Length: 305
Image (cartoon, rainbow, N blue to C red; front, side, top):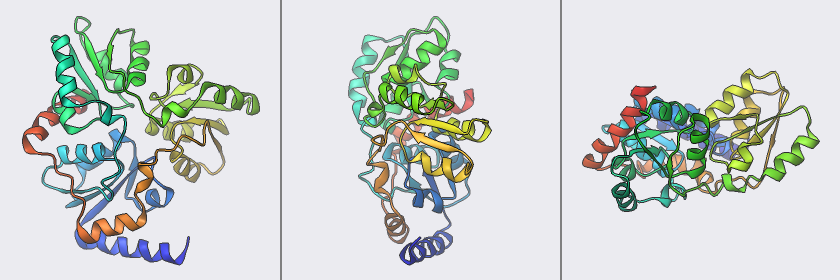
């Protein structure tokens, strides 16, 4: 680590103490960001940690919809997103207006909304879900109820296959996970015949069909820790490799694709975190009416769990 990074880290820690702040980082963030964070996790884990914290300020190192979710759960706290350009293309594939139009087509359907969506879309939904709990939540929906699942078609397809439920799927997808190809898994299985393959449910169906386990990033972390397998092929955004290798030094982690990079996740750096703490920007605040409606959907998810 360079002297410059050491200085940045020292300043961040000082300001964090002065402002009574906590730093939360998603598993896809740069390694240096994960290392400075107080907690690293997946969307569900970060939401739960935010709801529990006594900190006055939450510096969220992830993308915009995640910071919005923290604002939904912690309305009296200052939520900072170090770079407002850190958005999510998947979340942008659905709008509240388009969801309302689809709800008119299926007025009796339960709207299950992946957490990778805006607060305004959550506000038009009945219940939220994450990649870690979608299957369990679908299983809780009465069989006589239709499910309109938004916005990720591949997560929805995975949950439908696991539960045997037919669902109405929004045609959204993650541009990063779509880069993970089945032929790459087949090649890596040949090169590493004893390795296990784990894939994120945002991957296309042809990819998850080849995986030994389909897991959220939090699930991948636990799998790596608990598995006796020494080689694991990873089918998700490559930022997670930093944590996997750091926490499991005796194991080898091979990415399915080096192209599986979310450029928006990589916008947050030590420099932007320091700037965020110095300036108390960019503050993410969900309007109260939207927040209350969105919170109902998030609360239903947390209650079921």
